[in-house]
Structure formats: structure tokens, C-alpha cells
Image (cartoon, rainbow, N blue to C red; front, side, top):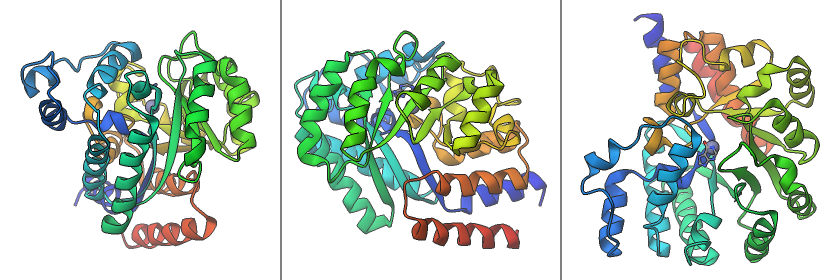
Length: 340
Ligand code: HPA
Ligand SMILES: [Zn+2]
């Protein structure tokens, strides 16, 4: 067996978490068409292939325009359930054992879909997935940063009856022009409520936004973080605080955040001693689920066995699982790598 094959086998077999995953970004065209049909919603594209061929993006906004359009066929609790369950079944095949998923409530409340409808469907699927597939989970409510802070506050009010189901809050959507600072007050309130905090920063936005996420928002984790590598002080700060970066290789490629996979910044992150992890972001739109992301890194960016081992451990260490749960999974990973 070649080294590449050994690494691919390890990557596929090892238990994994997914820490950066937008549930609405797992909406496969086939399911989108089926749900649109049962909800009697006319669809702009007349076939699955026509829709898929539209998945060519030059930047984040190009993608977001289609992402919001896609999610607009979700109307009923069962739609949110089916979306979430389809994702869990798919990543079960990739040996994902724990997920921390985002949902974008404002992408639905803005269309008249109640918070309750969304969260009931998503949460019921997560509970069923835990029971039927053994996948543990955390749920992260994300604020849309192109909207106002007062809209984020309104969303937090809607979430209050469900705080037992929500583990953390995030910040996503169009980054440039919407710095973390814009949401300082709402995140302060979230912190008081005991929620964990993460934020997309440094995907397209400048290093300054990563500083704000760390110092103003006081994140527990950073989503993407690619542009943090532009400043050595920032790298040192992320390292000092031991913050995990949830990196998304195929997303970066598809949204032109990186020019190719050969020199993906995740290798530099690991060399700097940062806790980088591998994630799929919006797999239905970006050409692959989590194992496809590992495959791209192994085939095109030449990561080593040691680097793969570090990535596997980081995915658990960066999660919000208990230390006991982390240790159990880390032991399995260690044994798997020792035998390979
Ligand atoms: O990659 C992303 N970046 C920002 N917002 C998003 N919302 C879904 N996916 C993304
Ligand atoms: Zn994302």
C-alpha cells in the first residue's frame, strides 16, 4: 500500500467530529427538489443538474445568494428534520461520531417560519441521530452578520425558551463590512447566559476582525481564521489562548479563499502550533463531505501521518465535549494510528 493509501484509510476510519457545519449547507439538490415539490414551491431551476451547474462561486457572496435561495423551500418542522437526518446519515458513513452544527434562524424567521418550527425539527433529528447512529451533538445558533445587532437580539429572545437545547452561538454570512464589533452587546448577553461563543473570522475579512472576535467577542473558537496568518502577533495570541480554528479546505477552494489545495494554509497553521481542524462547512455546495476534505488535503497538500494524527486529535480537543468523552475518543485514535 502506498503512503497516500495508508493515510486515506486512516482518515476514513478514524473517529471524527465536525465543528464547522451549516445544516442549511447540507441541503442536497435532490432533497431540495423533493421538499420544494411537496411544499408546492415553484423552483427557479428545472432540474437537479441545472441547479448543480449553478454552483460556481467567485466569492462568499456568490455562494450566500444561492444558499439563502436554497433554504427558502424549508417550511415545516418535518423539512428541518429531514434535512438534518439526511446529513447525519451521510456523515455516519464517514465515521463522524460527534457534530457541532450551526443553524441560521434569521434565514427562516425572515420568511415567516417560526423559531419553534426550525428548532423542533433540527433537535428531534439530532436526538434520533444520537439514538440510532450514536452521533453525539451540540447545537449552535448563528447570527447573520449582514443584519443588525437588534435583529440578533430579537433572535436571542426567540431562543430563550430553548436554551437547554442550544450550546453555543456563532456569527456567519457576509463578512467584509460586518466586523465582530458590530455584535459586541449581543455576544456579551450570550456569554452571561452561559452560551459558548464562536465566530467566522478571517475567511474573507482582515486580521483585525480576528482580533475583534478574540478580544471583543471573547470567542471560545474561531471559524476559518485563514487570514490570521497574515500577522505574527495574532498567530501568537491564538496560540497563547489555545483557540481552535475550524478550517474548511474545500470551502476555501470553492469560494476562492485559496488559489489551490497544494499550499493550503492548514499546513502552516499546524507548523505554527495552532489547533487547526478539518470541516466541511456547506458540503452540498462545496463538493464534498468531511472525508472528501481530508482526501483533498492528503492528495494535494501532502499532509503527513503526524499531521493527520494532530488533526484527528484537534477535532476532539477543540470540541465542546467533556474531558471524559474527549479522552475516550483520543484513545481510539491513538490505537488506530499505532497499528497503521
Ligand atoms: O462559509 C461561510 N461563511 C460565512 N457564512 C456562511 N454561511 C454559511 N456558510 C458560510
Ligand atoms: Zn461557515
